[in-house]
Length: 121
Image 1 (spheres, rainbow, N blue to C red):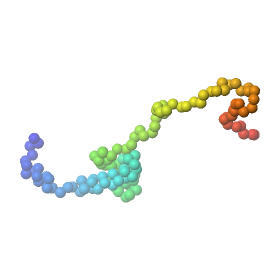
Image 2 (cartoon, helix red, strand yellow; image 1 turned 90 degrees about the vertical axis):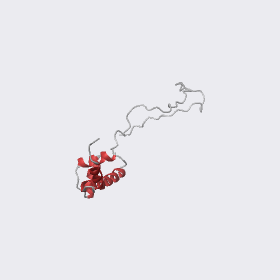
Image 3 (cartoon, rainbow, N blue to C red; image 1 turned 180 degrees about the vertical axis):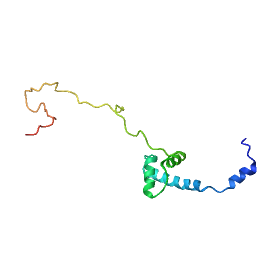
Image 4 (tube, helix red, strand yellow; image 1 turned 60 degrees about the vertical axis):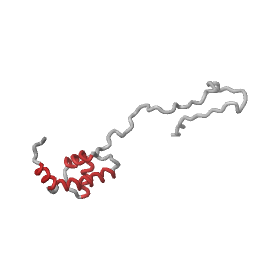
């Protein structure tokens, strides 16, 4: 298919990994650990800042590439949006008084005021 001789393919398999590949594997482990410590929230910029704080020397684009290959993504859109999300309807107490505040005998109707008291000046 790719017109590669079998001996060339097997020679390629036996070739040792490059220093860059070995360093990428090491950095991927560190990046994965830092990403998990953040709870899966950090993106490549903050991971890059964490790596620099640890003393690692690498660029942000390399961190982004390694995160993409490892399947690590930052958490986006985790804030709850405004609006109605369903649930139980509020229970309203029945209005037995029907705004008839004048009563004949004591202890028939109890009324309270829940407004905020004004402070004296």
